[in-house]
Image (cartoon, rainbow, N blue to C red):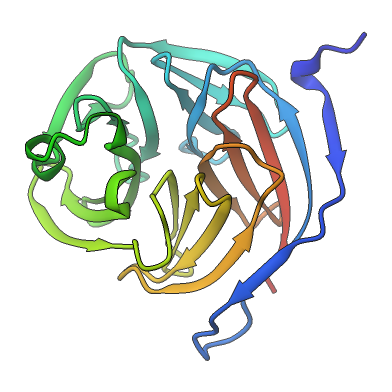
Length: 252
């Protein structure tokens, strides 16, 4: 019997798309999906590694792993933290993690990434006692700025990597939460997963929603990574049996 962790299961999906066009051109169109079962406990965060040759993934058990585009998993580092989001600063190689219970963003400094240190706490989440409705996503933006997203109120903050808050908006007019995020620098677009409503949202960086994609076939979609090279979007399912979905997209 083939190892389920490396078994690619194809699913035919009829996508449901509702879109608000910005007038600047075509929006991406969602197609079919497939998935791998991966050896990552409660897969919560995804991003590319520094050279784009694989995905970095984190889970609630405090492990950071690489995942190949064929679904093979290799453990890199293990820490005692409830990791909910992961991102990488392409200019430095530093990795940032969203730690939910503490409402903190931690840094793993390049090149070794072998020491976890707090960069800053999101004070509003601490003071309002977000607890397990707190930080769910972190994403590198540009110029030493991070996006940080929360489950409660679907809040989206911009913070400098040294902890200065620059802005805050809520996506609650269309999203019930921010479960995962991916920023596309070439397109200047932000992708957001909402696991409660089983949706992916395509947004401007100011939080304006451009499109919504229904993903009812994914339970608890908590992480996302947009891969134009492979014409797909990777989505992680934070379930007991974690799955990494590859959803085809037409970006043209």
